[in-house]
Length: 421
Image (cartoon, rainbow, N blue to C red; front, side):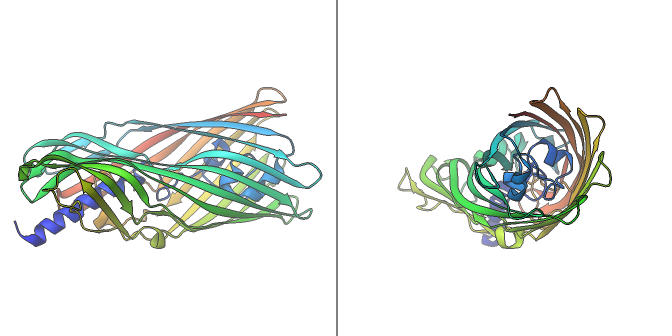
């Protein structure tokens, strides 16, 4: 096997492993919305933002909370068609279910026209698990990636005038990743599979928001989110060098560099033509081109001095493209206790076709959402609904697996319980 071929195979392997960060996220590696109302209106939330999810959508919206409010939300993802196909395989991912959750609390401050809050949010990412695949080397092995991003967000929104609200929130971001890339496969000096555990990052960023009530029926809004670089460090890696006579070798320091949450700018409006109807629109720009370009796995401190001092993977080109997301949503107040929701979210896949992989299922583009909220009494409110990620597929050529195809379709079930004092 030529040196050029080996480099191509290792580069493909590295990108396949770490591109899985978007496996179940939908606007790149981000979810389309946060909290039930935000999501069930298709993510058209920047001008609506009126519960504690405003901390992660538009902190200016916190000013619409006029009494202490607690939101507790959760989501269940069910993949209905997450399939990888190549000349040797056609397999559905075994991790068919993913649970996400979070919550927030906010209350008006005394003596000043401001509302402060704090929340915990799942930002995105999940990963794919493919068990017992036929490898290009004639054996069977596992291929998996589990990635998660969570945020703790304190924030405040202030009523500057009767028409204008401004807000700011601090994003404390935690990300972690685990990988199993043909961890029991070793082919001489050509290939050494690995298992990566516990690489993580803890970083901070911020979000700014504005809402302006142009008329009683029309609200204009904008938000800005700063880029957050996420170097995943402190992990360990076990590489299979059996083909070189070294057995399994543990590397005590493993990291993944070149990954970030993007800079974002969102613009939107909400229009309420009658007391019963609310229409919302959001246009969101995500600067993926500056966030994810090259991904590098590096592992050092091997347990066997005969093993390579640095785990031998080159940098993999990712070359994500900027993404425009268009979200539209509608809310209809059925009666004094019940509100109905619907929405649509579209974001073109930001990942070049040549960099697709069996673990990169974040190719979803269209999302339809439906749901309802019901007031149980003056204090309690329950919200629930479904998000349908419409089916999509991508065909590409992998240097490691050959002509390949990835398909994806999923359902997301969302639920929120709210208590107001």
